[in-house]
Length: 138
Image (cartoon, rainbow, N blue to C red; front, side):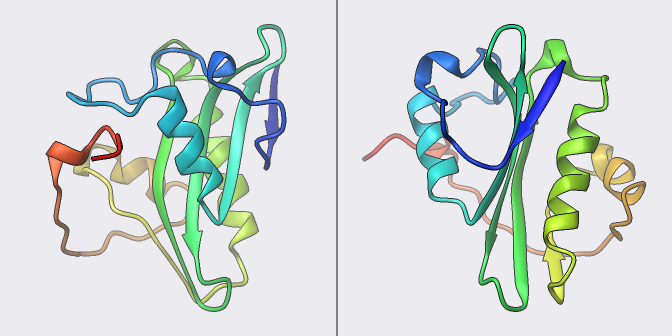
């Protein structure tokens, strides 16, 4: 069974399941992941009730007045395809429903996933500094 929570209570480096940021050449460590979640405006975590490990998350940065940005949605590979990402996203969008704008950048191959949850395709600009992808302190 998957439990959803909107806080970091009970989450430690050892309770972060391995496999987050699959395919990233320079992924954040569990310690950096916890730090980025702690510094987010809102989070929703997916916890496997049997293993007590965090197996998915979504985070949001917001001014809590008009705008919100969802930078990350992650579910470790062995739990994908079970509706966990959909549930995390739906819960976050419900939390943000009173805001004027909720933005999210994603690759074209996952745009339909977000469209099925009510989001619309848009254009945007971005910049990536891959040398900082791990989030390790410089």
